[in-house]
Length: 124
Ligand SMILES: [Cu+2]
Figure 1 (cartoon, protein in one colour):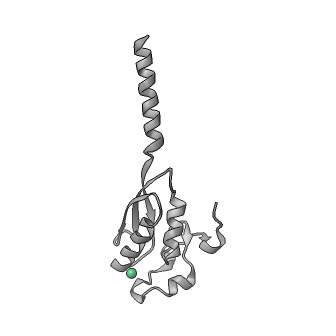
Figure 2 (figure 1 turned 180 degrees about the vertical axis):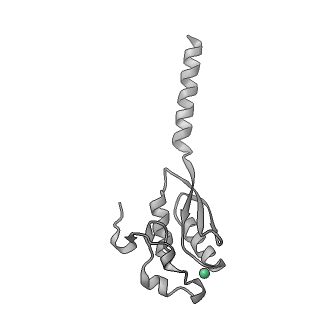
Figure 3 (figure 1 turned 30 degrees about the horizontal axis):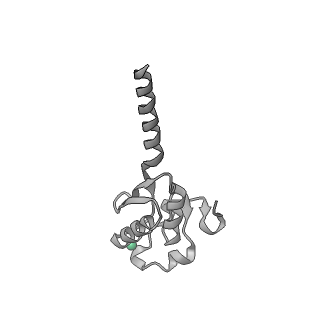
């Protein structure tokens, strides 16, 4: 009987831990060109509440983000990045914002063709 209770308590503890620590790591394709882009992309990702780490690879154009699933999601992070001028796999940056980037940051937009435009997507 005692063993059963013990297992129940352990089970509850594991469930409770799972509820609080919902950290996940994800890789997202993000368009960019140089180290300035890297700084801009990572800053935008980290500005999202719940994002713990962000690292964008200049060579691979891949952002690796670690975030708390109970606070944010991939969509929100991609929206924040598109808002500063970088196309992600899901969201296309506003043309005006993109055009205002320094010329060294003008990446080839045909490399990624996100279907959703940022301004047409409403918040949930
Ligand atoms: Cu750049």
